[in-house]
Amino acid sequence: MKKQRKPTKTISGVAPLAVVIKPRKCPHGTCLYCPSLDVPQSYTPKSPAIMRAALLDYNPYKQVLVRLKAFSAMKHPTDKIELIIMGGTFLAYPIKYQYNFIKNCFDALNGKRSKNLEEAKKLNEKAKHRCTALCIETRPDVCSDSDIKRMLEFGCTRVELGVQAIDDKIYRKVCRGHTVKDVIEATRRLKNIGFKVGYHIMPGLPGSNFKKDIKMFKCIFTNDNFKPDQLKIYPTQVIKGAKLVKLYEQGKYEPYTKEELIKLLIEFKRIVPRYCRIMRIMREIPPDFLVAGTIRIDLRKVIHEKMQEKNIKCKCIRCREIGFALLKKKEIKKKLRLNKIEYKASKGREFFLEIINEDDIIFGLIRLRISDDSKTLIVRELHVYGPTLEIGKRKKGKTQHTGLGRWLMDESEKIASEHDCKKISVISGIGVREYYKKLGYKLEGPYMVKYLKL
Image 1 (spheres, rainbow, N blue to C red):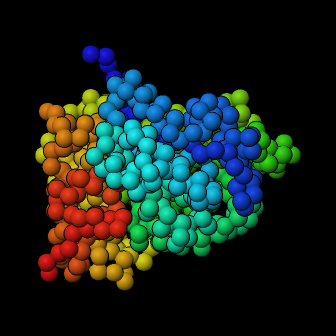
Image 2: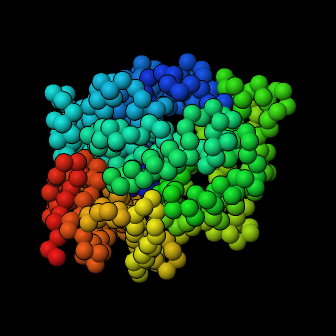
């Protein structure tokens, strides 16, 4: 049997499949740091995902099929797919384009054309390639109630907000076109609906500096208006096709050096709480499009090495996942316990439950929320970590399909009862609905729901 290639692709329990939307200018204009190069906004023509999409004329159906084929060739399971819509502010595109795009993605996963999106979603509940999570990127000011309703119709479970900074002066300086208030309101609305919320953060923007960036990062996790579940940290780079190039050439802007970035990002990692996952550090910008800024896309690895030398540990979820511990051939202690963190965020009460061992390796987690004006407990995320296993299968030594998800759901029901909640609503990926049905949940609108006996 052929060896699996790039094992980290599915090491967190799902196969991430990115689909790129067609190029279109942002309605608000162009941010100072954003390249405009006749490809989707903020990307370059030689970015791997863009090159694949462009060859297929940005056709979502074809993109999904090609990626499924690639995963299979690398010997990765493809029955649990996390669909990621990337390439710009998808929700700002024409409404008809949005629905057609999502439907085509589901049709490709299903291997069958459907009459409409609802039929496509229904088929995907039992399809060979199930969409267990769907992520959409948007701006804080393109996140209205109608936008959110549409995302629920799409089967979205995770939203990434282009926050970049928490500073209105910086927003004006870089022509961002929205405010900190927009970030606060979008975060609250998304969490109340049940979405998992990620922030894109850009240290080193014009108008910021080392001290300001540290202060901003602390604010993100100490101010109740923010507290995202995930982060992508994209240090500012000077890229061909961006207006920032002119400022750099005039000597009015200088990006962080590699050494400054390493120092800054280590401080960031000291701050990030254990309920947050740092998804990514550095964007994959081809060197020939880079005017200034570090070209080290493996900066995360460099940072980890420096932190090990200084005996500094990062508490973020990704650094503690069982899958990465297995990849490093660490000895895994099997005695597990449940750890619970409760915190206030966005006018609601959050509960973060994690299953860990004595070495603080994380095997599974669940995110719960009770809004201040609600008697419903919302399950915003349930995730069991470790290399992906096919649906319904078990394998000795693997963590998926061993009852950890049920353990977390049982604990959620206890918390709901303790707080006099009348029901539990799960924002479930389309392909996970069958799992919740086995736990006694029923589909009600976009949620899997169970009413509790108080």
